[in-house]
Picture: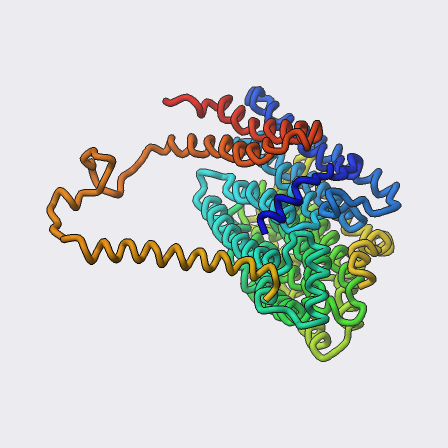
Length: 510
Length: 121
C-alpha cells in the first residue's frame, strides 16, 4: 500500500493551473495580505479606510468572474479535475463576492461607531469569503474540507466580535463548539468514503459508488459515510434537528455578522452539500433521498412554528432562515428521481441567489432602524411607515419576497422548487409538496406580523423623529432591493444563467 | 472485502499484537514484582524534582500565545520536510508554491510581532 503511494510520487506531473480561472482567488489572497499589512501600520483615526479597501478587493475579485462568464465557453478544470471552474462555480462565486460587498457596506458604520477591531474584522470577512469562493470550485474531499474550515473559522470569531458583550460571546462559543462538532462528523464520513473507494477525487468516488450500486450494492460503511456527510453539512445549513445553534448565534452576534452568517455561511454549506450529492454520492440515492426528505420536512415545519412565537425580530428571522433552508433542501429530496437532477440544481441555485438578496436586505433595514430604536423587538417597528416611509417600503418588499409573494424575488425560486418536486412525482414527493405548501402559508403569517406593526401600529412612545441612515447602508439596500425586484420580475435572467449543464454533465448525463 | 480493506487487516493485526505484547509484559511484571508502597514512592514523578502544589494549577495565559505561534513553525515543518525530499523534481513550480505558503504563514508572525505579542510583559 505504502509502496504504491511512494511509486506514484516518482512520476510527479506538474498540475495544470489556469491563471484566469484562479484569478478571483488570487485577487482575494493578495487583498487579504494587503488588508492585514496595511492595517498594522495604520493610525486608529484612519481605520475607516479598511472598509473601502476591502470593498475594492471584493470588486476587483468580481472582475475576473465576469470576464470568465463572458468568455464562458468551456469548463476549466485544474489540478487533475480537483478544482473546476464551470457555470455553477461562477454564478455562486459572483454571489459570494456580492454578499461580501454588501456585508462590508452594512458593517462599516456599526464597526466605526462601536470602536471594534476594524482591520481584523475585514480580514476575517475576506478570509471567509475566500473559503466560500473556493468551496464553489472544489471537487475533492480535501479541498472541500479546507474550504469549509477556511470559511467557518473566521465566522466563529466574527460571531463573538463584540467581545465585552456576554451574548456575543455566547453566540461565538455555541457556533464554534457545534461547528467543530459538525466538522468532525463530516470528516468522519469523508474518511469512510476515502477508506472504501481509495480516492479523494469526487468524480472517482462517484464512479465507485455507482459501480457498487449497480453491482453488489453499497456496503454499510458507505451508507454511514453518506449519512454522516449530510449530517455534517446539515449543521452548516442549520437544518432541523441540527439547527439549535442558529437562533442564539444569530441573536448574539453583531447584526452585520448575523446577516453574513444567515446568508453566506448557509449558502456555502448548501454549495458543499450539492457538490457532494451531485458529483460524489449521486448513486447513493437510496440513502440520501429519504434522509433529505425528512430533513426538509422537519426543517421547514419546525423553523416556521418556532418563528411564529418570536417577539424579537432577529430571532424571528433566524427561525425563518431555518425554514427557508427547508425549502432549499426540498428539491434535493427528489434529486435522483427521474430526470429531476438538473431542475433541482437550478432550483437550489436560484433560491440561494434570491434568498441572499432578500434576507440581506431585511437585515440591512433592521440595522438601520435599530440605530434609532436601539431595540430588536418586533414592536419597535411600530409606525415605521409614518416616520420612515422609504425604509418601511423596502422592508415590505423584502418581507413580501421572503414570504414568496409575486412579483418579488423568492416566489420564482419557490415555484421552481415546487415544480421540481411535482415533476418527480410519487407519493413521497407529493406529500413533501403538500407540507411545503402548508408551510408557505404559515410563513406568511409571521412576516405579516411585522408588516402589520409597521403599517398599522403607532410608533412606540410617539417617537417619530426620522431615522438617520448613513450612505453605505442605503447603497446596500439599493443593491438588495434591485436584486429582489429584478430577479422576481425577470426570472428568465437568472433561469438562463442557471442552465447548469456542467455539474450534472459530469455524471454522464445524469 | 475489497483489496483496500484487506490492506487494513494488517493494521488490525499489528494493533492486536501491540496490545498483546504490552499486556503480556506488564502482566508478567505485575505478577512477579513485590508490592511495598511507601509515601515517597507514590509521589508524582517530575524528573526527580519534588512536585510543587496541586495537579490542577493555573498557568500563564501568555504561554497560550506562544503555543499558537509555535503552530506556525510546526505547520511549516510538516509541509516543508516532505516537500524537501523531492524538491528537484518539483522544480521552480514547487519552489514558488512553497515560498507563497511560507509568506502566508509568516503573515501570522508579522501580525503577532507588530501587535507586540512577542514581548513578555
